[in-house]
Image 1 (cartoon, rainbow, N blue to C red):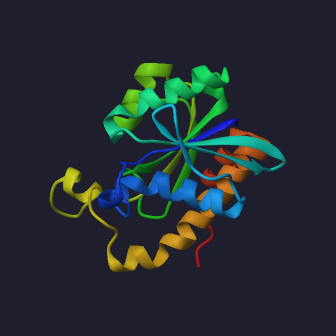
Image 2 (cartoon, rainbow, N blue to C red):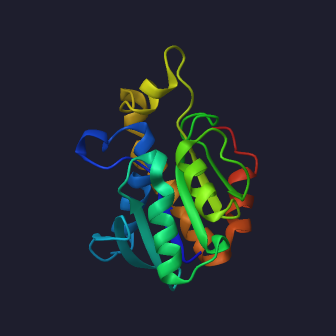
Length: 189
């Protein structure tokens, strides 16, 4: 992986919403690897970090979620990348809270950020799906655009640390190693 993209919505009003867990993961990754300062570039916030001995670009698109593809396309073009060089980190309603799944390619599953990225660069990029679960009641839009509940907020740092470990594995050993790690049966505690 040469580019890791975290999905979210720009602005402090959205900072701690479930939909912004991709941004949160990139911030944790940058902090852990003493990444460069975030700066505006290609319609996003851009930084670099040394991960697993590799110079990796980090991108947080600064358009709203539904228009994430523009920043990704500009970055891909400016860096001369292929979709296979990219890992996109995003929230996933279809996974229970705190579960992680890596995958290569595939559909957008109704996620508007992925839909826009796929429309601009194709579907062959890797993904790290960060489980936020589905709402028990109420609209999905309201759920993803709200903060984590108290119990989830207490587990968020541990979830982000695990997401960082999966990203590190994908960068260092390839997406298949990350897929293998996130799909093996979990030990019951």
